[in-house]
Length: 271
Ligand SMILES: C[S@@+](CC[C@H](N)C(=O)[O-])C[C@H]1O[C@@H](n2cnc3c(N)ncnc32)[C@H](O)[C@@H]1O
Image (cartoon, rainbow, N blue to C red; front, side):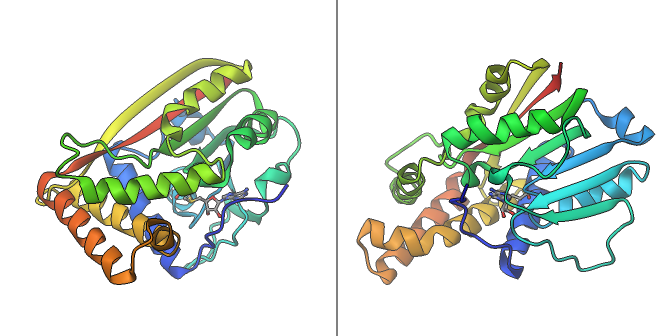
């Protein structure tokens, strides 16, 4: 099964993912929400699906030296430092199935994959595969963010609206979720093989300037919009200069008035 995900993890993308990782980690006060701290301490097998730059794994591998961590991504992970002994990275397209035996992980984590799966692929491939490789009583945790930001006055935010609407139109054209944060709990429920399903939603700040997390939010948003620029400019039928003016104005509104970015975590225990 081919993937709609087009961004390879080059140096620039790795930096963007690391910034995003820090924003989310601080916004949620931690790297995960499932009640796995004890088992990670005692020593278990953990899978990070679509591990990106590998930062989440590397932080956990250091904190939990008794556990073994496997990261899977279709883009190869390039490390700056020596790979820790309790970490393994595999280059693989998840949509062709996970390359692991049934019931082989105690904790499966998958964060910000919505750009890589269509609705159908979520339900028919991704979730069933996560469930298959998780041991009975093991945990699966999903985390996603929405593309649509929350703000009060649409008038003030018309340039923000213009960019976001174009990005959503692009994603909708390939049937990729733009509001996946609202759906992840439902995915686990629909699978029918989970107990103790939980959901935590946070509205993280994107501006105004003056607060560290809110400033990180703006930076993260800027980077995502830059990523979409080559596709958004022709869609909006504007020149590059016109787009740059829209973009600057949108960022200025975020810096001045601020908006909220919806992120959510859902986790459940396999029966
Ligand atoms: C937005 S990044 C998130 C990375 C990481 N999970 C994080 O939270 O920092 C999405 C990652 O999923 C990977 N990805 C997307 N579709 C995939 C697929 N079908 N199989 C494997 N990896 C995939 C991409 O290569 C990319 O590294």
